[in-house]
Length: 262
Image (tube, rainbow, N blue to C red):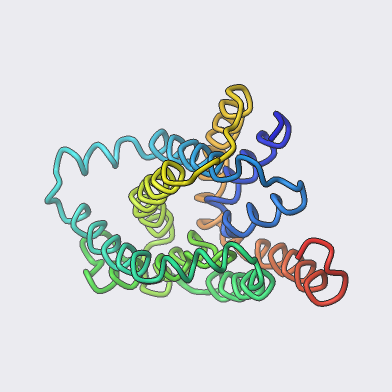
């Protein structure tokens, strides 16, 4: 993997991790387009670390509050949301891994993400505050986050949609969605490190491409978080629907007609 490939992957990961367009789906797609095979697993680990850094920077105060007050109501809501995500991830990890490897469902999943975002943008929030959110609400968001492990189903899109349909205030929906992703991204990174250590003959990534990819992912991730919070508040999610429908249509065309990448 060369320097420019790592930077491109870092920017793609950083932007799409937090915009509702599916980072995993885009990484699979871009890696196929760039012909990246060597060092892909190593780079996935580094890119996830970069986006995790972006999350920590933006939500430092909220994360520190959870550390200082681990039994606060907001902390407990986060725990409740993370539990079903973790259970789904553990039970269906092999299924998700196979879907990632062949990319055969990417087109359909991109299309489904577009439909989800279309309906989410038109949903009127009931303005629920932290005190009004129930553990059931948090659990539903966590279940949706678990379902979003599918390659081209957007995690942020699905969790934000779930939060809006449960009546969350729009700003709180974004805030909660991004915070519950912290342990998920951290867990995914740990599992990828485990796979990397267990694999034999895994090509390494050079030091400069590794650093460049991480930095690109962190910077792009920071910008996309800031933009996404604004987009949710101003009801601009439908623009992402058009985008993922376009990408999904392109992938489906290639899958069924040209067979160039898929």
